[in-house]
Image 1: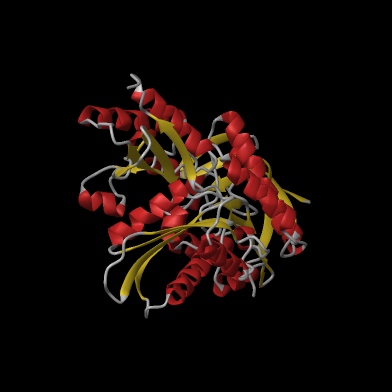
Image 2: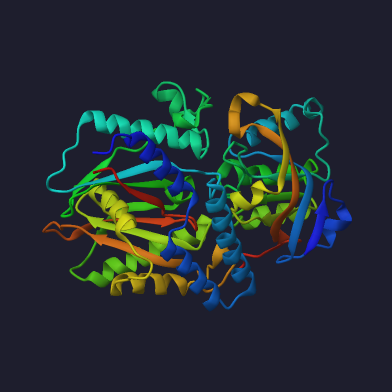
Length: 284
Length: 169
């Protein structure tokens, strides 16, 4: 086991907040090439230039640096201790200070945290990460994925039930409808759509998170391709200013399903910078 | 690219059209959800002179100001969009943010001779275009306090002007 888990996590968080992965850069280049609107093309180029500047500076892609969401994958022979979890949390704190994260942790008791009357923690590390999601994997690794979730997509995301009428198309139609509404309202398109379909709201949201971790811009299933194509037909465009490129890709994960007429669907229209993600192997 | 410098004149505003690309330079105000209602309350109470800044011809950028930088938040959030009409009436000439505004807000901008511009959320690029920053009022709000910052050629597209919107279907 590597000794300095906190340092690895710190640097991974900075990478997540400041870097486009190679397949995402390539997806943007293709979108710029295919976009027919000059205005939309200018927006896409500006977003890509911003990503290159952020990577070079190792600084934030967006001033809403986001809430850390962590997914940990454990191989069959790996063990996780409470001490390691605390080292991961310490790494998150260090990463938020180094990025730097936006100091947007809210102070105070339950009531004051809701109405924001308790004030803001001036320390970027005051932004608590969301609960860690853990899953098994076949490889011999202890792999941590860090995603930074911004506020805009959280406003426009939706988790709700769909009566599927024993027809997958009914569910796809609803996803396209929600996504089109969300992308139009977001203001920070083009989006990557994160979609999870499960048996409960918790499960659907966690599947959406896993879809963002596992998704690849160059590898799209038929359902993912169809959702992207249909939302793009809405002509919302980058920043909502019209154009062919409202959605760059869709990352969809379908979990186990219940014998029932209902599916629980989570759709997150991730903004032009998301998924802000980086990955590190904390094992030997 | 049309170059705008604060304070922006009424003549400059009259010449702007939806879809124009502009660059914005000079001292500009920054505020968002938490502080804009407080700024409106100052106007209603006749305490605007306490700010020490003349709102006439000014720009307000819908952003927080933090060590992470600046970048637009959604201007159609309730507390932000509802500030656009009264702040335009008070002299603000350009509201800088992102997202579609409601038709009544587009009409109010026209009524008070103001415009709305959309700025890409490019924090890393804006960092090189942002000079001095200072807190103007409500420091207890931290990054959401009312800030004054010096902008150097911020890129934007006119999203609403003279009763028209770039988001019209």
